[in-house]
Image (tube, rainbow, N blue to C red; front, side, top):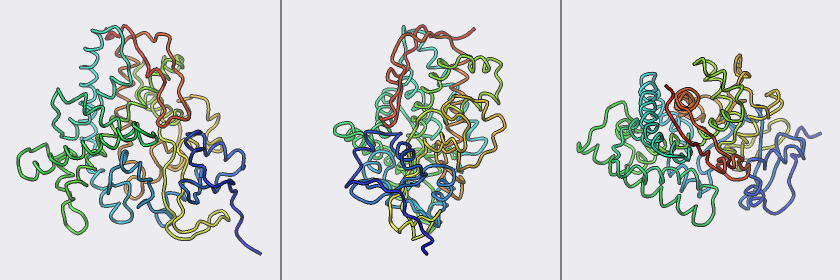
Amino acid sequence: MSDTNQMPREEGIDHSLSLMREGYMYILNRRQSFNSNVFETRLLGKKAICMVGKDAAEVFYDTEKFKRKDAAPNRAVQTLFGKNGVQALDGQDHKHRKEMFMSIMSPEGLQRLTDITKKQWNTALNKWEQVDEVILYEEVKEVLCRTACQWAGVPLEEDDVKEMTKDLAAMFESPAAVGPNHWLGRNARNKVENWIGELVDKMRNGEINPPEDTALHRFAWHRDLEGNLLDTKTAAVEVINILRPIVAIAIFINFTALALHHFPEEREKLESHDEKFAQMFVQEVRRFYPFFPFVVALVKKDFTWNGYKFKEGTLTLLDLYGTNHDPEVWKNPDVFSPDRFAKWEGSPFSFIPQGGGDYFMGHRCAGEWVTIEVMKVSLDYLANRMEYEVPNQDLSYSMVSIPSIPHSKVVLKNVKRKL
């Protein structure tokens, strides 16, 4: 008698178009119809496995069972990740490169980031007081571009801020796009990689000297396990892996503003400047709203899990959004409730807006602490340090478009600093 089960399977030649049409709900819809946390389908002309839930995340982040090298589709590599970045490494190479990233996430480094973020919000608020209305998403991307470059040690001239913001944003706004928008993302990455590469070379030649605790300095002088400096292009890719994700926090900040508007009873709890509740609020924004829908890996070697066979080389998708809304883990998952984090001591595999598992040994995003600190500063400004009106607008957001952003990008009117 066999000790394996037949994995639920979606019939058909290919379902890539269905994934694009259904976006964040693609895996969840099939989870419901199959009544299973794992199922087989076909994507990009090949067999693929989709998974959701805490137990699925735990096995997905087992580096003995899955690998990241060559897993991401080329269109994502050419826009979102870049070639030879930390996301595509495995084993000791990944651990060593990850340590490079974690080296700038010290308490002192994060405090410096917080101070820079506050300064940039203050500067932006001065500007916003002079205009009738603000499109929050567009403005915050610029705030975060300035923040990211200053923190990373990347010199940015004032005349170049808007173009740099546009290029960094195109990288994370375009991976799921088709046609001109996708090529916009590719061209933006090529341009920024070339520019950052020139800075890396200038630094190594002694022409510029950013502070030692910045990403540009650390990454330019980082040596691999063989003792060699990263090639210029890879060093540039990794510096962008600091800049791009910080600008992408604008998505979460837009949803933060949306939550403050839609849940005024929760906003009132922030007026006491309770840091613990602010942290809970930020975490609930990250859990509740869509960010990126899933992550991908390849089966490293044949194994059996829960009676299902996983064959070497099979593309596997883990549903991030679905796991953060898993009713087996979260009570009333479709209700916005920061209080759920008051005593939360959950698994690092059940709350995974930016990946799961361990920071140092696994593939959980090295920048998660950065995201939380930037969001806390931004929340404080939106809730306690400024007044504004939210006029009638389309505040709905798509569960198909990736990444999802409120359609109006959250328009604020009559912005004033609170006295």
